[in-house]
Length: 331
Image (cartoon, rainbow, N blue to C red; front, top):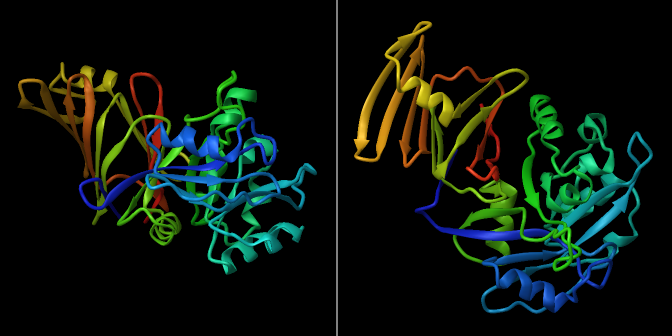
């Protein structure tokens, strides 16, 4: 697995937005303008039960999409499925959730399960589905409205079960300008060769992106048991694996380690990176954890022979509590 910001383009994309064609506050052109002014290069208009079409701007790719309500979960609530990159109104007439997903895939689009926590969906509702590309792991609108925006527990349960599915952060924006503000709070950064529909969809399907509410990954690499992570500077990096496996690395722990030479079987070495930074390596048995710290922020993490199983994914948090998530690396 390899993700490097120095190769190709980093494309900021909003995958879940609504306009006045359904229940959004702003007309389609104003929604596109809103995101264009905030540095987005891709926007997907996903009105409820309607495909909204808007011409592309020179600086912004508008991808066709729609949010579909179909089927029923164990709690009797409908599934919400995003069809991304599908411009075919025949999908609007399908009511079975698996048939919806299959139709989206057959048309070259991407099926995303929207806000599972908000929808009351549980593991059993999703594990039986086949062919969806991603689930919304963070939905900004659901979080500011009812504090049900995070669906990470469902994602991990699927990954632990062996379901290969990506995670996306989205807005699900409706109000834009009225509080509680629900736009520009969750997005994906797509690594692609060009800002066009084919390249963007290909990268989304292959998981070559990360999700964020603020922080940025600049490099993610896993090869022969060695995990390398680079960021623009965060307070915490967590490596998450199946069940109880994982590794959190935070600035408080690093500061504690920097003041001791050896404790509880750990071997610790400290080296100066430069006048502002430190490299701290902690070894315990075969596992080695190396952190590079500059300006009181973690810039780089290298883990050799970590005790993972099935998959690993990364989660980082900055000083403001904002987070970013990598896609899983399957072992």
